[in-house]
Image 1 (cartoon, rainbow, N blue to C red):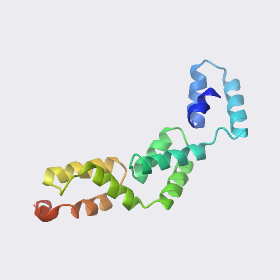
Image 2: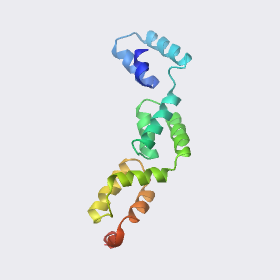
Image 3: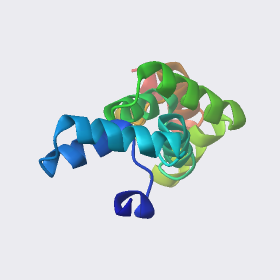
Image 4: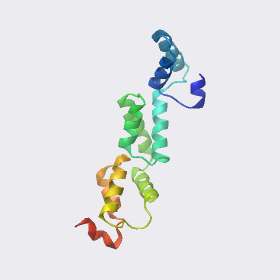
Length: 148
């Protein structure tokens, strides 16, 4: 219970923490069942909260957000649904624009700068076509370097 007082955890995370305390598997299963039944443990709720934080605060795209949620031990289908729900409410294009603005002051200087930003935003989970399109609008008059 003290674990859940600080923040939300997935079922897999709670299972791991209880196993580290050398509790027998039947006790871990019983504890998880009680917590789930009491509504204190809900993977879908954890997934939605993680997705919202990733999009609004961390400025991450759908792909990386889904991978991070799955890494918490949450089922891929639950992760996909949470990401779809959160990004259905948000405009991923606006999140991408904010992510670019956070990393860029002024126009893109040269091809190396373009490549660096492009790779960074791909790692953040944004779709390649949207990243390229957004970055191309920020090349200023020196946009010719992209054609080289």
